[in-house]
Every structure is written in C-alpha cells, then in structure tokens.
Image (cartoon, rainbow, N blue to C red; front, side, top):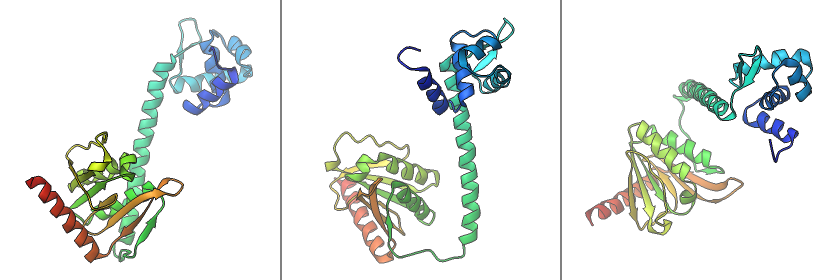
Length: 248
C-alpha cells in the first residue's frame, strides 16, 4: 500500500475493477488482513450491517473467497484482474453482437432507398472506417494508400483491411516510400506494396474514395467521394501502379 493514500487506492479500484466505494474499502481491508466482519468494518469504515452484503458481492466478482477460518480472504490482485478482464471481454462480445444485430435490422429498413452520392466531409477516424466498410458491401476490393495520416493512425488501416478479409474482399495496402521503414501494419491475408504514390492517404473501393488529412479535434479529417467516373479513374490509376510494381 506504500506510495498511495487510502483514498487513491479506493478510487483506483472503483475505476479499474468497477467497484463501489464500499466494495473497494472492504477489499482493501481484506488485503490488510481483516479476518472478521468486525475487523473489516473497523478498518474500512463501512457500517457492520453492510459488510455482510458487500463481501458477498466481492465473492461474486471474484475478489474474495471463503476462508478456512470461517470468514473470507482476498483473491490476489493479479488473479482478480484476470477474472475482471475476462468479464470485460465477455461483455464486449455481447455488446458487439447487439450492435451488429441492431445494424442488420436498420440495414433492412433502408435497403430499398437510394444511397447518398454527394461528397461527405468527415471529422473522425471512426467515420472513415464506417464509410469504407459500408462501401465494401458493394465492392470486391479496398485499396488503402498510406502516406502520412494513415501512417500515424494504423488502426484505421488494420480495421478496414481486416474487415475486407472477413467479407472475402481483396485488400491491398499501398505504402509510400516516404512513410518510412518503421511501418508496423500487418494484416493476415493482405498484401503490402511499397511504391511511390501519386495519391494522399485514402481508402478506395469501386464505389467510394475516402481521402484523409490531418485536422479536427480527433486529428483526422476527410472527404468521401462517390462520383462513379472519378472513382473509376482512381482505381485504374492504382491498378496500373501496382501492375508496374509487380512487373519490376
């Protein structure tokens, strides 16, 4: 407990293990050696009647187990952390499934409507990811050109490329020579091609081209273009550059 005040440790447990103040205080009392409800109450300041309820909650959360002495002992913090991480991952999976179910329902609602074709202006990396993945449904590929912005926001590249692979689409990452040799983007099943690029950072499918540049509160701004002729010209340019690279 050295180096941190009691208040700091309670706050830390509340944030990281998602405990109430009483739960955090009783867990700390167990760590200090409390071997009975009265000792736990005295050490923590939690009223004795509440100690009995709180200890059962800690047990359900994997932070306390019955002891051979007739009360409870603490579960070591590292072991408790593993249990908490597993719970977080399970909750995340469950939430992800609910998000996907809701999305599928909403997609059916708009399936008969025409898609927006005018340029869209973006103000976050998540908008870029959403628009790129949306365009993948009607495209057989995504070409990702990495220059400056996407060099710093590798998560955009990896997310879009991974989704393309899941959907059975072709994914090609074109890396500018100026992006440097320290690029760590790696997505299984996706080819990386290093060449001089005439394009800025972009996510290109057969129906949409999303250009990204620095700016905004998130650090990424952009514009998504759906003009059929322009996008076709862009795709042809990329394919010619890649073909030339592979032939060299």
